[in-house]
Length: 332
Ligand SMILES: [Mn+2]
Image (tube, rainbow, N blue to C red; front, side, top):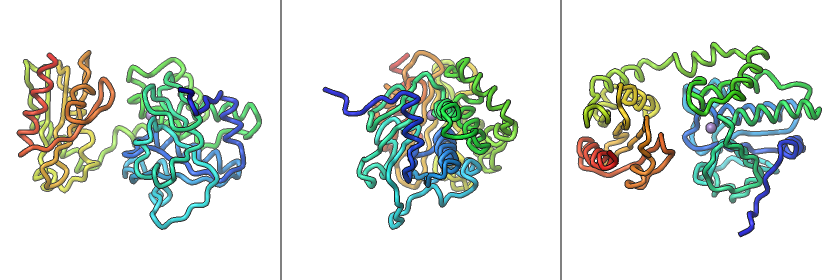
């Protein structure tokens, strides 16, 4: 089959971006800092080129990432009755249509350009995809730098630089994950030379959490369990506990980091019950060779080899844990 979509070179991408067209920028559901940072970095580039641009997502921006969007949630969500006048759509950090959520259907699937760094996915538009980039923010930075060389812009605006630093820092776990490359570090160095507020950004991303979230982590530490001589670790977090803490789902996002911090744990998982329903969300991580996306696929979920998730129906959080554990043990 002939690929209906074109792979763009960096210069072609720059030329297209500089076209004066009202632009809608989309980013993926359950947005992370790479998605939000890349989208708002791009929006700022359009602003200096005096091209109208608007960012939209099927989900809200998490509270802790609102600093990347100037604190404006309203600029991120596309209401049903909101008519946005646009001439093209650009997506960032979104490897497959499903990652764009309901907006993809509502906008009649007509994305014009996708900019992404995921190796696997379903291509849905003309694209610039570079899996060697640690973050989509890295690609946007290279693009912005080239746009200066090609004289589409005089310089990269400060807001863009700050958003891109946050995007790259987040996707590399503050430059410590294995996707960090010499190129990532060189870009980070250029960003620091350009005076980005890296210390503040890293504090906001990693060293500052709502009290409720810390209390939830405390409960998780207390509830840690290990199996198979410590090679598997888990946390079970029932709805009643979530209610008693007054926690939102966002407050429970770091529980998996608690589980995977246990020394010697090769597979870690968290079972969370977000509502009264007997439906359980599972996050899973692998520290070694076991492919957790295969385990999650058994329950209809998926993800990457070392980070995956799924949902399952069970009588209780305990029995959900048991079902998941049985599948994990088969891999040992
Ligand atoms: Mn990313």
